[in-house]
Length: 96
Length: 492
Image 1 (cartoon, chains in turn cyan, yellow):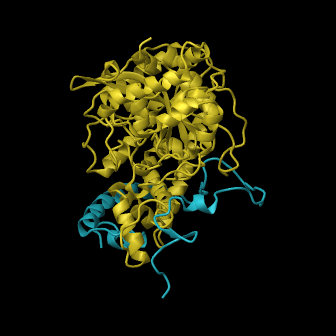
Image 2 (cartoon, each protein chain N blue to C red; image 1 turned 180 degrees about the vertical axis):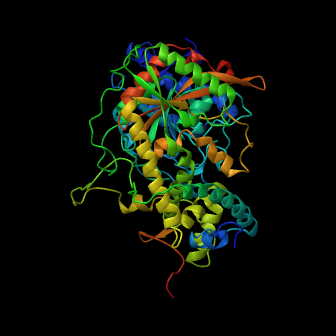
Image 3 (cartoon, rainbow over the protein chains, first blue to last red; image 1 turned 90 degrees about the horizontal axis):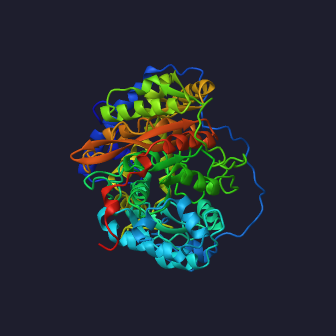
């Protein structure tokens, strides 16, 4: 566990599905502790009663017709696949 | 006219040459190609070109269209059909875009020719273009210095006459800061003014596409074409697009400009400070009233940004998993190994750091302390700007606290790098528009280095900041200065 924050880089990297070498984890731990220490300054502010700004400009209720339209063909969608067969993306076996 | 002069032309000048039939679109592409072959070995602005496609498009170009026959360089994070879109990352190795981004469709419809893809910090994460996994880009004013970032390739290309104009993307200053460091014009439009469809997402509530150009007029000409509502981007705004050139003039009487008192921080280079003060005087002499304003919460902008931007990035970059496109690790033993190693081998250190930080600030137990609090402070910053804009039409500040720094100088310390964006980030958090224009030089180690002036405007008030920027530009000669590389003859 890290010195001045709760961030455990090796653990969070696993959550984010990124393998790290021990050395990388150590470097990131120090660098991200610095960043987290810097963002501590946000605690100085009183934010009670402030509404969250999800978007900087008010855009509400954006709807479109739920209608089919032309988009990629299966062939186009697969055109960048690292591995494919029979019109499908191929990945290692997931379910035993 | 020799080719070297031709590639130095602005878009507006090139337009008159093309429309007066003094030059053919095909000759423009050839001149550009020669120029790029002559200097890009030293600059490193481009990741790929499609000269053959560009020549083909030039043969059918209708020069009477708004940007007819004008080649435009594209930051390599925007999809162009059939072209690579690397995001300067190994993880998109081999990817070819199966579609055009909306901005590319709009450029084509206006007669422009997207012809080359420019370097950037990997996934636009950085302020120096040093985070590119593919190559380094050098500042045309001093090759030992950074071009800024993340749109460093676009800015360096325009500054060294390797492009007449370019598109960049700006999430925390990524158009304006490199424009400042390379001595060109960079515009970040209002959030939602330009469609993001086809821009590879970094931080979806902050990203915006905009032009990098040699003059303010050219920036307005490109914005005229790329702005507008797009049903493919639900955050794009439906307000009509005005003619951004229409308000151009030399008189600024009646315009009120705000100088934020919090922006006279320590850490601003004294030469930058002097140049900005002189620019404020100059704007005043053009008729603008200068008013001091206060933005008390902007001191929190960088902290807010690195929580919100990393949170959004951690979600957006989850799609790079080695399944549907791009790089895949070899011989994965199971699907988790496939994800973990693909992302280990495919992403560079800055991208990994940001995904990890973003995952952390969104995780159970920390969400309220970091992400939710940051969103609330973002609202406080937005209120600061809203109240300042009740008193003034635009705000003035430096674009960057310093001129271009040395390659390698800041890479080991991410936090120092983040602070390079201290003046630009608030515009992304608040969604307002901003522009950087050249306003002077500082001399370091015998090299002239450009300084950028930033103007920030109300949401959808691009017309106003362009008007002010144009009036200032026309009353100075800064935009006419060319970097030493510009004098290198083509083909040498």
